[in-house]
Picture (cartoon, rainbow over the protein chains, first blue to last red):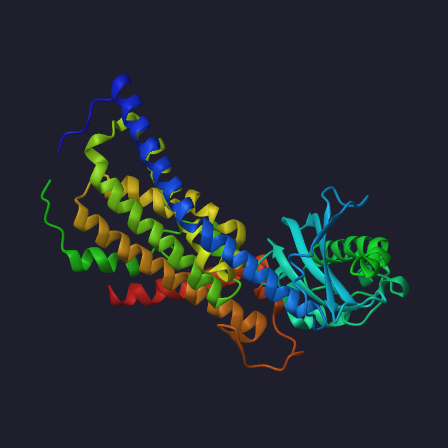
Amino acid sequence: MSKKESTFINMVVSLLLITLISGLTLGFVNDLTLEPKAKAKLEKKVNALKLVLPTFDNNPVEDMKLVKSETASDSVEIYPAYSKNEFVGAAVIGSTNKGFSGLVKIMIGFKPTGEIENVVVLEQKETPGLGTKMAEPKFLQQFKNINIASYNLKVKKDGGDVDALTGATISTRAFCDATQMAYDAFIKNNSSLIESKN
Amino acid sequence: MAETINQKQNFLKGIIKENPIFVMLLGMCPTLGVTSSAFNGLGMGVATAFVLLMSNVVVSLVKTQIPAKVRIPAFIIIIASFVTVVEMILEAFVPFLYEQLGIFIPLIVVNCIILGRAEAFASKNNLLSSAIDALGMGLGFILALTVLGSIREILGSGSLFGASFVHEDANTFILFILPPGAFIALAYLTVVFNKLTSKTS
């Protein structure tokens, strides 16, 4: 079993070959998983919409609106829901980069009056077992049917009304941040959403 | 060098005598990081074991073609490719686990067990021995992570594999889900493991 000599040309050729093969393999697998990945994401979105919105008969994904927001760096996605041509609520994507490990993305369903119908967490990279608990019903329960206009959306530690997750105050703060962002975007566009279907 | 390795011993050593976690104490970062629940530990163990098996096989196949001076970068590229493949597959087909493990999936690249086995074993042995070595080591890693995750989940959350057996508002040892709990649990497990194995050998 003789190893190849470590000459300059041998080293360059072998590294080149390895990177080439691995690059091709990765490209191939990426192509292969592109469709299932997109499908899984869309399915998740549709399931989330069904969870946070009251019953609707339109296709919120098609009626999706992108609106500008001062607090968010990116534009905000709003999914309006209609039932028999009447505006019954909208799901808003709220996101923040202030999570313990960066991005936290949530979807909040608002009733036309501004009350929260339900919340689901779409994306987060928080600490497993601690911050990840923000996606569990036990935590999300407290946001149901509250109206942020008359609610102090801050962690109790900061003088607010929100029960923080054990050992994950930063994650909870990020969650509140994202909720606030979604609420601001919703309130700003609420009236236009009601009119747009007529 | 006599190339006759007892394959049974080769397989078993990864689980008991040279268990990567309890004896060699390698790959501590994911071990301490993701084992806050039994399921996470198991998922991480399986993902790592898969990468370990694939990289050991490939390294063993190309070992004579890689000049000694660039072997480490070559191994790292091979390992990183497999980790990226695992990451893409998990995201496409097991999105739930992908979200739970988060940043620790890409970090499999720098897991010392994988590079350690590539350098210490696969680059010196034939394909079969390398594959069996990887299977043994991988299984040892899976077992260690699952046991550690189970103990932390039982003590910290009062559940096992998500099945809760205490009242919802019960006071559990939250310390065990937090990072210090990982160190404490791992230390005691290592003590117990070494006590048990020293008796049998």
